[in-house]
Image (cartoon, rainbow over all chains, first blue to last red; front, side, top):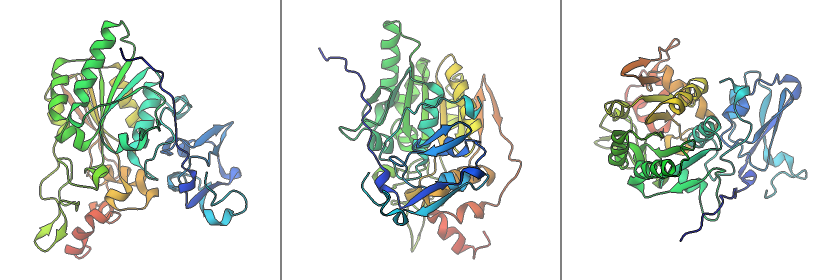
Amino acid sequence: MIPVLPTPHLSSRTGAWRMLRPVLEAEKCNGCLVCWLFCPEGSIRRENGSVSIDLDYCKGCGICARECPRRALRMVEEASFMGEGGGKLA
Amino acid sequence: MRIEELREEEFVCGSFACAGCGAILAVRLALKVLGPETVVVTTPSCLLGVTTFYPQLAFKVPCVNVPFPATAAAVSGLVAGLRRKGRENVRVLGIAGDGGTVDIGLQALSGALERGDRFIFLCYDNEAYMNTGGQRSGSTPLGASTATTPVGRGAKGEDRPKKDMLRIVAAHNIPYAASASIGYPADYIRKLEKAVKAGGPAYIQVLTPCPPGWGYRSDLTVHLARLAVQAGQWALAEYEEGAWRVKEVSNPRPVREYWALQKRFAHLLQESGGEG
């Protein structure tokens, strides 16, 4: 008899893959959620009319910045965040 | 369904998919529509390799891994088992890449379609065997350079047209079959909702651009999925109750604009001197 086991969610933190980091200019964001919709990793969170980015999982693909209709996101070299958690293994 | 109405919860998260992977985006959106009462059945493919690399499990719904040709056979078995247990509310979603659908998985899929089981089959089409290094599949478009249809002296890339899988599936007279693109998410989500409501087998083939396989920068995935439709290289079609509907392109783009962004088509532009 094979036991029926629950399905655990064992994800892998992939933030360390990132070469470019999406940075949000909150004043430009109108909360349209296009970035949230298109993020392949689901690393954008909806937040009261705006969004935030989960850097534990963001791989830095840049789709969010490219698709944002208001250009509220831009991709910044990850190395420039050295000293504030940038370049570290997630 | 509007964007705001989609579930916040992620059902596939923390995978090893390449940055900018179109396939994982297609699966993520599909599971947001189908919800937690879903069982995924998948086969050796990029999707399986990036979500279930032991002990990793990136799905939050049960995921059954089966041999390459067997996706739809396992789907049939699960549907029968769930029916026997009185749990027909659970949705069974078979997912395979284009190779696992139009080539290797075709026989099992045909059988399951013929039996008329109630399930959804999602084919994420990245137009080659990307998991093993980008060999051509039946779904590779004419002219594309792949690992097994290279460009060189006497070789000009894929020399056969793309297999018309949607018509093969529709020929089984199933309730619902459609092609979609992650570049048109509202259309894709609407088709997923229709697939959920179909009283029998439903098939969706979604175009999912692949940054390493097609040779482009990872931020272009959604742009290329949209451009493929605008350049007439991918149709948004629907087969429902015996009738076809194809979305008309209101803003057509020249095909060379689509080719120019991808290494797999670079030779086509060189041959024509950039005039395409």
